[in-house]
Image (cartoon, rainbow, N blue to C red; front, side, top):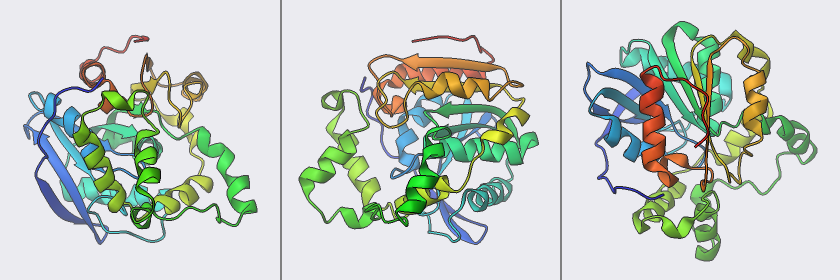
Length: 284
């Protein structure tokens, strides 16, 4: 459930692939490096609690994906292009091989990066990754000409406050148990979300599933049992696409699409244990 409220992390900027990229860091530079990738319509701030909690023994870096948070937009907005942006970000910061954590859209980006640059990824932790659900997108998007009413969420902030409040709470299993500051942060994320429609288009025309069998790094899958966005039934299906990777799997009870906020302590423990080499299959 909702846990400790932490202050914002200091924001830094770097140019990666010519894109002005905002990012946040926490921990010790000589600690185990962890790169965290947020989901659609949010920002790196969604990992604020995780970064504070693991800062004692890790070096955590979380960029705002282009078009979200305080990072510039980019074109073409495709997953291969974003993979190259992430590679440039990694190289610019002169990072060693890292553990990758990806949530939702950040999960498919993390998996795509691991496929493209396997030597640069030591561990892969995917939180409700949009890897299988995106398979249904192409026909729908093509038939409707991308005209699904997918306005960029930055412009949606000017719409009905009732609608907005419903949208930011929808991914959570028990939104009433969250601190009010969570909603303030998510509203701020919506104000800066300029690439939400682009993300759905990118998902519609990129399928990483055929390449997943190439992964050999330890993989950890984390899902909320009550996820209304990416169904938990995707978890077992995803395991079958990872025949050459040691996979650990966790399903968190009373949890929706945002485990790092809804089940903070449990999620942080899973990340810590996974990076320490504890990979037994488990249900929470």
